[in-house]
Length: 440
Image (cartoon, rainbow, N blue to C red; front, side, top):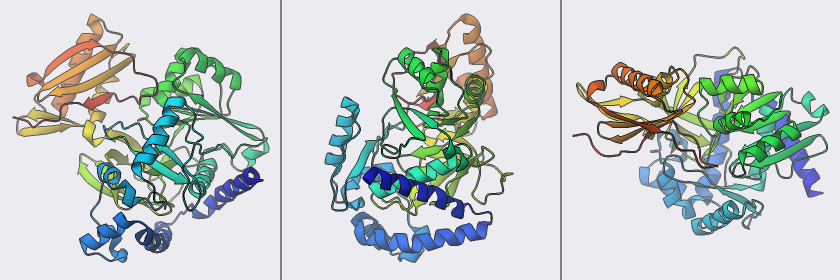
């Protein structure tokens, strides 16, 4: 009975999503204002940390757009007073880590308002994050995603849909939503690639969801499937990944999701848009057209996200042929803490990950790579495969990218080596700044 009710709730949310696909920007912003007025009153009354932020800043709730942002470190440090379910971070981490170790993701934590699902982010920026989601939030989340990802919704529900998730952890988002027409299969990334490729081929999904680097690896391992749609998650979707996945599997779209929430979804034309019907975004300019989001989730209550600054870098497009008022994301360009800081003629120069990824994509025959800043003026370039021709061309392309960025290309030391295998379940990051010191 409970599972049937859950399915109806998810379907109601999915159908209701059509009513918030605004085509007028002013109407979308009025919708956000209405949600914010009610949501922030409730959150401030139940989240001591959120209330203290407003009090400390001397701001009324109506001035929430002026509230100084916080990031993931502050969220984790204040978790016990931030969440509204009276959960302790130690308990959340214990359950989440036990699930990661046992690969059993069914356990939840009890609260006064019912059980909550818990999980961990992979912490690609060096700061792992915990998240907690109530049953109501989980079902709403599932409905929104179903509406945007299921091919030809709602008519697509008239035929059998098989959805394959290739993920590090099963967050339980769809665990109770399956039906005779909607089947979900979680494929654990920690299993051997050959096994995953064989199971994926046998399952023949109509919708395939996973990190692009993993999906490409399964193609190489012999996976054969022709889903109606491939959904890229968890990593930056680069042009070479998109092209390979479209050749091997089929049409590719992208979802922008993090510990902080469901942040971006594809439109009917396949382009990524910010999820502004549910999340308010302020965008801080950091230079060269890159924007850093500061978000306020207007529906999430168990773990409120109010004026929360992400480390991600976005590039926006001018508009979209679909006509939606929500802003279109041209690309998620990576993390700001992965931008390299190198010496230039006028002092410190920022070299954005995009420049280096574009440079490495010009190296013929290069299968995979990683570029890491290991010192004030030192880069390590790891290549797969590694031979003298690739070594020479990769170094030349990196130096050209540095020159275009204004860095002192001749003064940067570049070492080249073989690329080690990425451990299963770890997000791929092709450009990383490991060195965090100050320039001389």
